[in-house]
Picture 1 (cartoon, protein in one colour):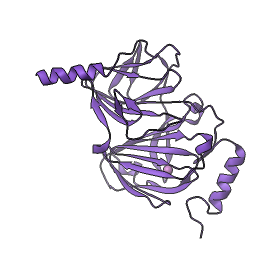
Picture 2: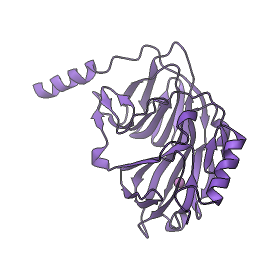
Picture 3: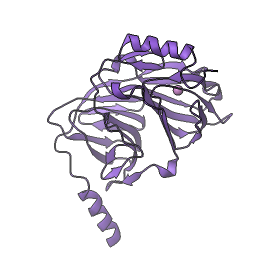
Length: 301
Ligand code: CO
């Protein structure tokens, strides 16, 4: 009992309260689409929101218990100019890339890939039935890093840093910092925060946010209230940028799971052509030419 009290106190003191919380600017439903060799998914963060949610370029949510929706996976395809963060809630997916990396992504694990100057990779399901559920987030690279060496890391579920708040909220810190816990990955320029939050019914959760960062919440189970706004499952809430606000306060209705994502905007030109995201049309021409001529991912003979 005393032990519990002490740990509650230390948790509480590690979390100075949010004095002024951000409001919800708008709710986004996302668009049903398919990608790869016909994987059905919901594009939650679409291209028209890239400027508003800079440095994030895309968020896809996939979730199905019908193998027809996912079995074909994502055969070989290139990327250049940004980072992809794949977070698997349930299921098994094998990743292989042209830089020689290979990894099995499964239940609760994360894969962080910095495409930099370019990789060709594939993501193929390793199951013929059952549920496949997860997310892929695209994080932009600053202009000076777009042609850097590719980088890759697999983080298994047990190795994702986590904490439990005083209200019993399990916080999985994929990136950034929460309540004194450093995430699995940190990045200097974009300073991404990526939290997976598991909230018991009725729990409240506070997170400090830099006022200059763009931020959003995606509810994937249950329902949250953020200020006056109810945020049901399968909705993204874009948080208003308020120079006076120092964080966000989430209030769970039923038992709820949500992603909280924030980062520092790059404020650089964004030019996307499919899997290439650069700063100018000229750099896109070069990416396409390099890919065709085998200079992305060492596919040259
Ligand atoms: Co990919």
